[in-house]
Figure 1: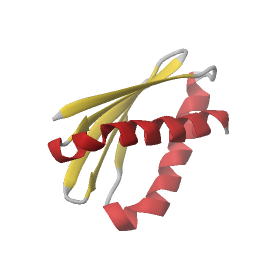
Figure 2: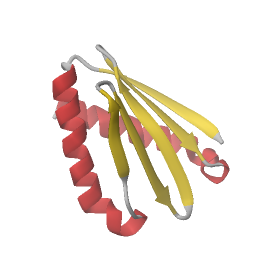
Figure 3: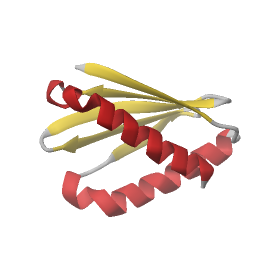
Amino acid sequence: MKTLEVRLPHSLGAEAVHQKLDAALVKARAQYEQQVGPIDASWESDDRLKVGLAVMGMRFDGQIDVLPDELVVKLDLPMMASMFAGKIREGIEQQLAALIKA
């Protein structure tokens, strides 16, 4: 298992980040749950969102830490998915950047 870490700076307050992440989860569930199955997500604390889902039989678990000036995503990649770490990182960066700017 390889852990992928993505850091993205932001200038939003914690509450705004929470709202944006919660809205993105609602959208992701509506768009993707039929293909990938349940998308698990829960706020473990005020500044940590735990997430998990299965894609093509592989389980992905991770967390998003909301820091005062950046988001830190840590995602455990199954061995088979680690060869796509660059593409996964790029996708996370693009989606989070779009979310923060929206």
